[in-house]
Each structure stands twice: as C-alpha cells, then as structure tokens.
Image (cartoon, rainbow, N blue to C red; front, side, top):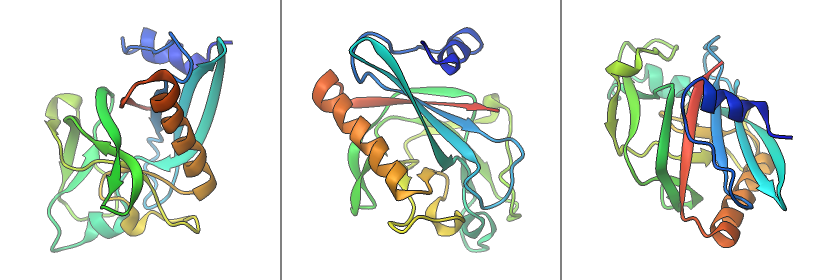
Length: 191
C-alpha cells in the first residue's frame, strides 16, 4: 500500500513522488511545529519500493539547530531549514566535516536566518527564505546516540540514534548501487 505521506506531498504541495523502481528514495522530513528547544522531535520518512511493494521507514531527527548555536553570542545568525520545500537533487554522498559518510549539500536549498540568540528556531514565510549551498547536510549525532541536539546541528537535519542512522545510510547506498541514482531529493514539510 502506498504510504499516505506521499499523497500528501503530491496532492497538498504539488511535489514530485518517486515511484518507478526499487530504492528510488522519497526522503521527507516532517517538522514538529511545537518547536521545543534542543530536542529531536521531528520525523524523517523514507518511502521506496522493493520488488514493486512500498516500504516506509520512519526515523527520529531534528530539523532545527541546537541550543548551543542558536544562543552562541559570537556565532553568526543561525540557519533554519525552510519549510515547505522540495530540494530536488540537492544532496549527494560525501563526508560530513571530512569525518564520516553522510548526505552533503550539492545544490542550493532554502533557509532562513535566526539572529535573536534565544533558544527557539524562528520560522518565517517561504518567500523570506534565501537559497544557497551553506553546508546544510543530513548527518548523525553521536555514535552513542543523543537525547539533546546541542552542538550537533547548526541547521542540518540530524539523526539522534546510531542504529537509525545506519539503516538510513544503508538505504542511501542501495539507491546508489541498485537504482543507479547518485543525487538525493529532500522534502521538508511541517506537521
């Protein structure tokens, strides 16, 4: 059965849904608008087909920067990944901070800047977003898992649990090896 979130991104937002072959990944972030500070309270859905049957995995992430970067007095205005958007082909496999394999930004994505130094990410209208390559990657937190975001995100999409991260990266590598696609699309909507 086709995951309902795919109908939502197609019918509500007019975004593309990938459904032609095995491991052609639909990577969809769903931001929790309760906007609790410094917690992994968002979801990342990965929907794809295997042998013609839909698969749907859901992971715990943050789509907001951590308290450390939002409140750091001597840090530039923090980046907030803008929603809603579909960043087509914006990611490729690469090294996050030259340390480990992740999805790194290869094309511009929409983002806002938040400079008031409080603990909350400030969301604006999509029309107020800037578009650029600024290193808004999709990566993991600690290899030991993390319950708080802190320094792990200055605007990136970040996984809290290592086992979920490993499962996600396995899917990413299968898209590259089996489907033959070397770029990845990330869609972000709000709950």
